[in-house]
Image (cartoon, rainbow, N blue to C red; front, side, top):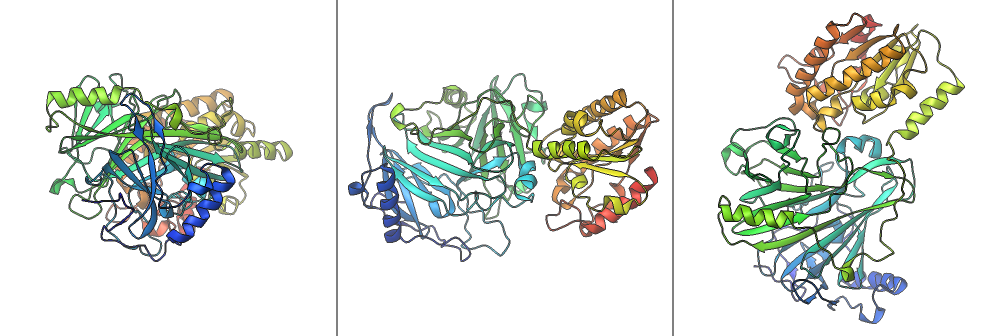
Length: 595
């Protein structure tokens, strides 16, 4: 049992990491907050003692509640406890996360790492709840790497500020890549829901298309329930990223609009897995010992990340898979639609948590299913008194969706306008493997080449921009590499084949004398779990190419495998995804005969 009502330290068997951002002593934190609050008038300075409970009376459907913010410590770090008298949450600004949530005096539902420190270069996964940008395939564009996450948003110190109305605000540092920061506001509304308003503020840099991604790591529950889309385009009503890992992982519909997932908690649970749901309701519930932990958010219209066009995922679930290890957790993930971010825009994604004691402790009971369905389908509530202030309400622009590559596409157009490509050139187009091919001209001496790669893109993006960057130079040959990111974000081999056919048709209709070549999807250590999907995609496209004499299939997949059938690590850089010079030398040798 953990008692934080008097601001006592929470001892969970871990201490601050030695490489973490500096923890702010409680006495120093008092002074920082006093200055910040007196400047903003969010809370009168005379009441800002860190031992004081900041309260607000607000009426709601469930009656009057007190929303309180109290200074405490957690795992040796300065923290804030928020409570409505029934449930509590603890926010640790030093790592920018919610690290505890549960009934007062009850167990913590959030997973916390048992590690006290991390190795140099290791991802500092402390657990708890956080905010990331989505889709993950855009990370190389945003921060120049595919993994680990941007430190400014993940695990680094956030600046705290206690607001009026029993609310707390934390702000991350500005991430230099996207030129944006995360602002998170926490508090209980009149209905007892714990609200986390996640705002992404973009202050500078090129336009980009992003989703706000809420990720909550929890102690593995007995069961998870997701809304079921009866018209889902996916088999089994969900999409398995990388394929279903084990037939013993139970995922079954229990009602026409409700899906039950039983996480692997025994020996067969080794190996992680992730699912996405094109759910009509953005909500998810984890159940343990007769208590349902419900998360929900609004589901505005728009394109959601990771899935097929018009069938993206507002709800995702990840199981770390280490059923017997210290790092076994589940992630409840709710995503916003993809939004255009330009300098000066701010988009919000508010997630609301609640705890419910169920009538039955049995997750397979019909009464449990009926009750969970009512909880998930009930619209998210909010109290006017507890809503964000005008200062933090997101400023949005009524503009058509932007592309994260618009700046690059315009640069290609401008370069073509100023220096038209020579006739008979070979144009390379596709994702980061093309963009990163900096030695293209040296690798093919005597061949006029054009590089039109834009990192993080899908094959469908090459279709979208073909009219702007592929057709105008009128190349004699177009060499395409894409599909790698598509599979990583949940597209099927059949969807990628459809995009390939669309690209081929678009180019051939405009330039009937131009040949087309496809470089097979490469096997990489970082995406080894997708090897079978890569093989199937390559097989489908190769079969289509054989029926067209003006197309060529370039197999780099086979020579990039070692004698055991694994991707050759020596061909890749430190992220195990993008190739090094040795990798590009191999590509040049394989591609050269096709030019």
